[in-house]
Image 1 (cartoon, rainbow, N blue to C red):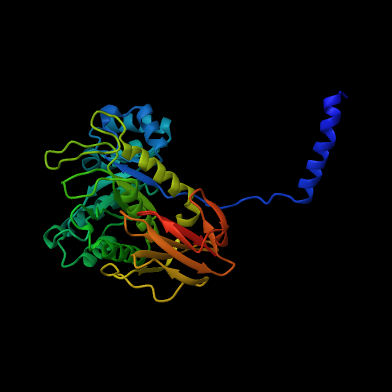
Image 2 (cartoon, rainbow, N blue to C red):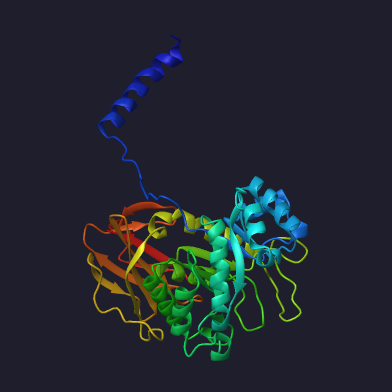
Length: 403
């Protein structure tokens, strides 16, 4: 043994002995059996449907792509490219309606198939036809879902074809046999801020989905259109997605991924621009999607046990928080509106607190008993007591606790 080794060996022995007496505790982490699927609308045009493009989409945290594809040949090309990138596809083509059995049999065993697009925002008068179409698809392929997306509650009675929104959703759930229910709502307007009926929309839709025994999927706006909505930012997309999740959503969707061209609407600033370049929205979505997937153990398969609000004013159609969840002794939000949701997942319960203000941070004061732990954005779990009693919740952001 040389001189250097002789000097170091006793030191190594002492260090090893010290750490063997005080073993390092492994970091507690969330466990999940899956994750919430994330879909992008107007994802990749057929002429851009390459493996590289779908890999780029996958890197941003998407699981499912949906675009209006055209011919069965476009569908085949899209599925093949997406499969190599690990993305699933909701397929659409005119022949799906006119040659349902032929098209379904052709693509039902493709590993990249997620489901079949039937229609967006149908009125009540279209429900019977959609129900028959869905049953025809399901008779051939019961494994993959049929996709229909419903109006939000700010649609007019003439658009809905129903007396009110609850009747519209309830009738759809009964008449059209789908795996899940989906609706779009883009509630952040440049003039009003948060649209007054957004939370009421979530209350009605999630309630009707629960009655029907089906999960629901929600949206976030990720592109500027109509000059009425807020520019998409990390905060605006967080507040939409985290609110959907707090209401129990089991699927998330962005409108849109690729910037579409429309003679009727002025689309600007999508994650992928018209010339195929990334915008900063792409990076924000990538950040947000990673946060959502890190927290899969909170949201995937969860059941809502409480949905109430704090603040000087609570949203239309919602309930005020009057009794604190079991482990809490104090919860204050300095007058700001916050959504407090209690979710049950397997044998764990989670408290999700969403700052409904997407422009300013919220001061949250929270005290609980020794069983209360905080779930961090990377999925790790620490005692709540390691944080100060009062913390800042960033604009549109959320904090999660478990007990």
